Length: 484
Image 1 (cartoon, rainbow, N blue to C red):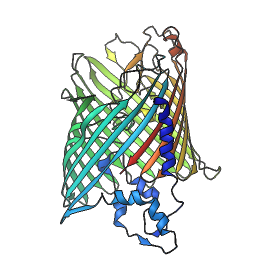
Image 2 (cartoon, helix red, strand yellow; image 1 turned 135 degrees about the horizontal axis):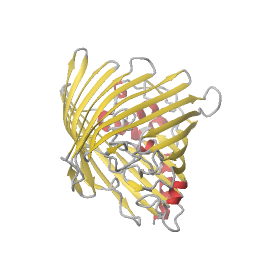
Image 3 (cartoon, rainbow, N blue to C red; image 1 turned 180 degrees about the horizontal axis):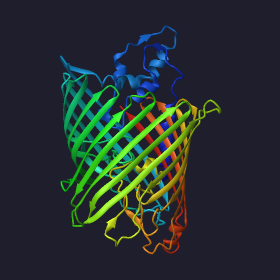
Image 4 (cartoon, rainbow, N blue to C red; image 1 turned 120 degrees about the vertical axis):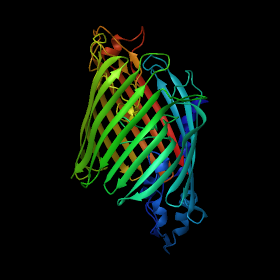
């Protein structure tokens, strides 16, 4: 059964076909405008393109274009439902299917076990606006796994849960707009290195609490106080033993540049003991473009206490890129990145120096195989993207991973230590990973994505392997997404 799943996904891709090269109506939204309406969190979706006119062009191709856009136009009608004067309702959601073929990864990562399975996820939301001041939003999720030899991971299964459910009050204030949002909600800030809903995960990540914010022109500020939720299978656990709060400022006043400054606090009392932890993360993130040159930098410092020990840790990211479309075909863009997150060299000195990655999207920065976290890690990576067609994007990423402290652990994308040599004799060389990704936007409302990754074990992984396990691994996935 599992062997036919890739073929089924390919058939779905072929069935969607390729969209037309252009619009045949004046004032109609482009495919890019429609795709940009969907944001990292659905409650931030922006369907303002629906406010424009769309007049027919008498060129004989209108009927053909209408047939191609029938699904998009049908889903558009769900976004502006007038229930009464100044009362609007928007409905939407997503169906996602992803097939995994994992060779040598295993549940605990790099343990030599193989697996094949299918992940499915359904999200559906209702967004109600009462005038311009009151909003109610609810979003449901059901995530499942079919097949496989190993037990599901914690981010793969949840049965019929409320992903988001909040009331929001907003008002004009001092030339901008302020809001207060109370209830269950996802959090997404900046480049998602520390705060992300983790879209790669089948279940997504959410919080219970209160968020306030203010927007005025190029300036935005947000503050929140929440409890991170832990969701495992059929269990839905509001983790009242942890408080996650913060303040996040963003400024885009210089064209092409973004500056973000933040302070985040995590205060936790782990279930089952282990000691209280309370620490702050202070950071600054900037990115932008100067002509064809691209740049990004993020620097973080953590301080506080963890399990009774003094805690201080650091992390930094620096990247330089170049858009090469003026020199080469296929619109290539090349990025070179350096990442470092501190580790702890001596677990017995009463001081903890291992950086804590909080609630990240590690998958986007440390490889498709999720072998590495932003903890005790040093990484060099090269990223090359190509656009052979406006609806086709290809990405190749090469990573070189090493431990910062050889006596500290290798942590996987979830922050769990998966292997350690307390003596440090196994060295620092984790290994290298190559990721190849192809993404097809067959329609504005659907995408098909294929990915393949290969990991070559370095000296540290080979030295800490069990008998007969090479540490090398392969990962193949095929994903289809339908949004409505």
